Amino acid sequence: MKKVLIIMFVALLCPYLAAAQAKQIHLILDKYEKRKKVESIIISPSVLQMAGNGNYDASTKELLSKISEMRIVNVKEGAEQNGTPLKIIIRSDLDKVLTGERFSRVLKMQEGEELLELFVTKNEEGVLVFLATSPKEFAIISIFGNIDKSVINAVMTGGIKVK
Amino acid sequence: METIDRKRAGDLLERYFEAQTTLQEEQLLREYFSGANIAPEHAVYTQMFCAFAEEREMLNLTTRNFSAEDKFTINSNSKKFHFRWMSIAVAAALAIFAFLMMPERGDSLKLIIDGVNVKNRELALSKADIHMEQLNSMLGRFRDGSTKQIDNMNKMGDALSSFKSFNKILTQTTLSDRLE
Image: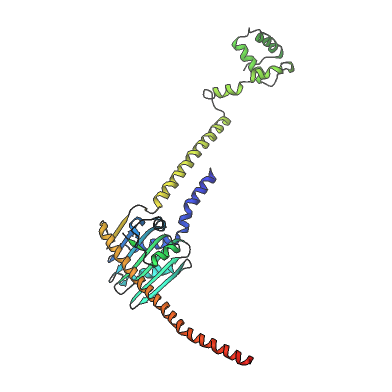
């Protein structure tokens, strides 16, 4: 009986241990989402759809089933904390996680004053994070779930949209 | 407890087999056979008088005073019983914990603006759509840029290919001159 309990406990804990990086991103977003001049949107996969795919076919279903949640946090110009722009504070918090061993930067694109970066967890069970920086706003678009090549490809090609 | 000697036990056994013993006399016989001083000639009857002793003990358990050993047995049974219920309770607690910790998987859409929870599905969808469009637009520019770069590289490759063929002709001419 004890063995069964231990196995059950480990089985329940495994997903949480694997998704530790995702949890760290969640914690940072949770910390700042209720500040002034900050917008936060949490979207479940049922609200997402594949671009140019009116039919909800098996491949779409399979792809969207890999996504557990999508979160967008948008920090507007003028959002501050103790005189420091909030976007700098959030970026600093995110850098502590994103520059670690468990994340890799897949994309960095600078166009004028706009900067777009994409970070992905090295293990599939994790998170994909877009950081879009512009003088007017700082947006964090994160997709949680089983982030494999198909999900990254769909996101990179603008394949995932909101219904 | 009254004890009987060998001779009295023999007399009582004879009366027992002739079905003439009273209940008290049968009790005396049972006590004699459950003791240690059983005559060798009476030993064959021990099983007969002690066969149901354990069952009788069990039936009398509720009515008599418990010994320390009995109490220990009852406690260990009760512990087993408690452990069984405790393990079920722990399993149930773990299941509830997992349920509470799991992220929402329903048709959920949550929008917070300036710390205020806005319950407006259309607005949330519209804002999410705007952000995704902006993202896709930036990614689109990146894709276009990459395609242009690849096109330029291809053009450069095409331009260099004529040099390559010229170089090939030159090499072949030099080789044929040497052979001659």
